[in-house]
Length: 121
Image (cartoon, rainbow, N blue to C red; front, side, top):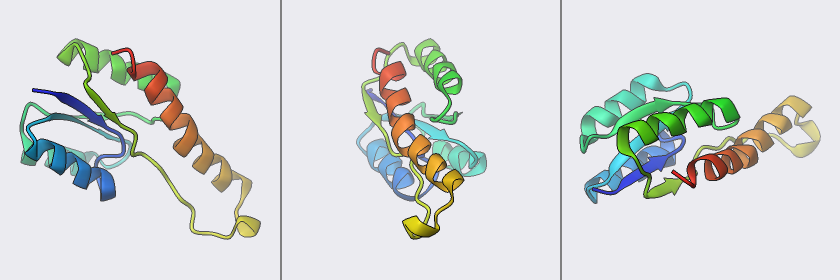
């Protein structure tokens, strides 16, 4: 059974991707940051030996911890879907520096961390 990691998988598009992969007989690693209840429900719904793993994709240490868990449990990773992201619905001129930093950190550094750390798994 192929193993897929979906970041930001507990709601929205990530949730739909997760269900779609499960229908295709993938074991899905449901990554989440703050939606543990939703992530566990998805894992329960889809089965296929799927798991929910909490990790902030912006945090290199947390991504390394998630990589270690994946390697220990599965020994490999066949598919990575970098879905975690954020958008602040605000005009750029009205956006705070903190909102900008959070968006860039999640959307860019998060993808960088996942590919760099989990690509070799």
